[in-house]
Length: 447
Figure 1 (cartoon, rainbow, N blue to C red):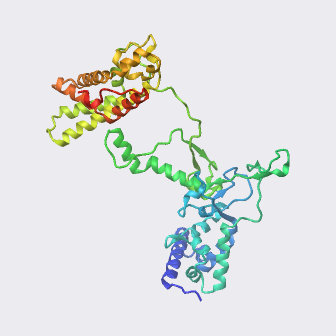
Figure 2 (cartoon, helix red, strand yellow; figure 1 turned 90 degrees about the horizontal axis):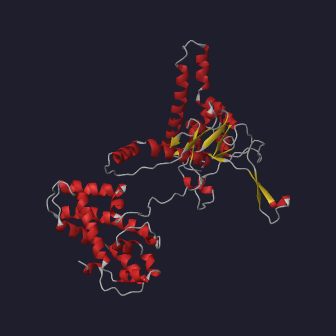
Figure 3 (cartoon, rainbow, N blue to C red; figure 1 turned 180 degrees about the horizontal axis):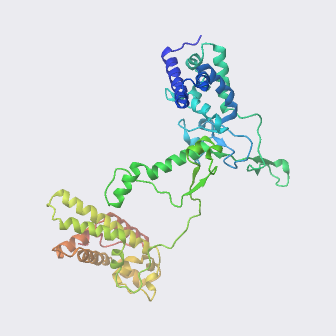
């Protein structure tokens, strides 16, 4: 004989009783005690009568994870209830990723949804339906002192997750013939697929997107971004998000979960990527790339941040030095990345529109060394990086000029930071190795 736990039985009974009384009291409060309907209501919501009636009405609804009515509201056919652990765990996102904490849906007669609400009541972290499917002895004992009656009720309620008799599609459902054999002209080589709407997955997507868009955490993160402040978490954006309305003014006619969403179902953008021309353009008709580089938004913000920090006259501490180096390193990373985007195009400095000074041509067009012997010889001398460092220092000094007393010492410091930068040095070494030369100088020896 299976052991039972009186405390768990009491918990089951208390949960169901609270549910029944809540529904009964909502209707009872509208009736006078001497109204004939009052006694009828009390009898209707007695434990045995209500549960027995619910066990009979459960056939009017069906628990599903994949529904047909979302495909077309007039479609009549097979719906499926598939626990995520029963599904094949392929690499693509699907209902199998939902795990144990998935939301089951229900379709059928909206007037019988109170039965589903009963079965959805939670005890010890699981729904009554889950406990019934697990053949829980305590729930059986809580339902009725008569084991046969309890068994019959549970058997009726658990049909909620079973497919209705026979697999069937419908003329208003979607159907797809999939070639499974070798001969596309042979009818028997096709298998018919009837796609269903992944209702539980759609609900999880809806809840996730709504949290990312409207939760207090997301609002706080966006506010911090707007105020240019740090925040512990980031936030997600869903560009080109569309909303599909199912069920019109009666979303409950589609399913319970669809009703909870007000009929709203999110559709993520599935447009092909729109390739756009890079924001980096070749610097025609200028003698230096530094003004163009400095006009970029990210660079302007870095320079402004460095200027504001220096203007605050921070104490000459290690923390101050680290802060300056952090901003400078980020700025140099931006410069190296910008230069690399120009270096990807070979021999562009041979164009008549290029008016850059010679050292910047050597820096920004290493591909030209494979064609222009004179250019390659000047590149191999490796005296031009020192001049690039000097020009960078001059540019940064000018951008920081204002209330700051900057001069040659600061200019040399910025130049040194660039020439000793690891990314700069690696790029230079790679280019040098490609030319198979032995450099007489390295960045650290150039100062």
